[in-house]
Image 1 (cartoon, rainbow, N blue to C red):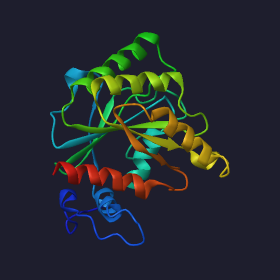
Image 2: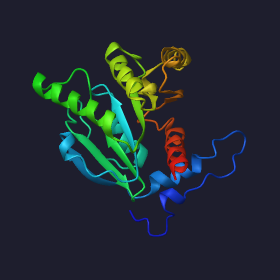
Image 3: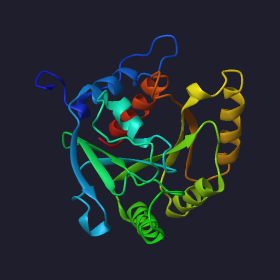
Length: 229
């Protein structure tokens, strides 16, 4: 894949909307059609890459589908490793498109098939990263649509609220929820975050299998980049 003739992601401006379409849809498409590269895997805060441009992080319970979401966003089948084993991602994984934007795949929290001391170390790293990364624009917290927000998710949302880090909820695996039940699932999530100070009010329902919701999610990320330009 090459981007020699593609505009810089930061220069991808919104286009006029038609029929209520998000004006950043096209900017998001251009942003994620560019060439994303693996940058580094940081197991500790001391090994984080230097801050450059804007960062958007993906958080979620183990095996919620973060790596699948990275691959679906970028249109790359294996940019991020996927596994059916909870806890496979054991570092903060950084992907970058040019100097303007990095996407960070965070270690899954909650249940993981790993020693407790290692899980505790991941948790400390996550907390330190969220508190100290000043170029972190937003955390997209992935929630399995089949299960909704659980107490372990609430702990991360509490941390984000206390750290005043903006976050938004991404519902994953909506293809495994009955279409008739999805509106109730979305409404329940919105109600749970309604009074949270750092929560973005919009919820993003997605399916990595069908591609549903990814145009809107890319648009939301392109909007963040445009706002910080």
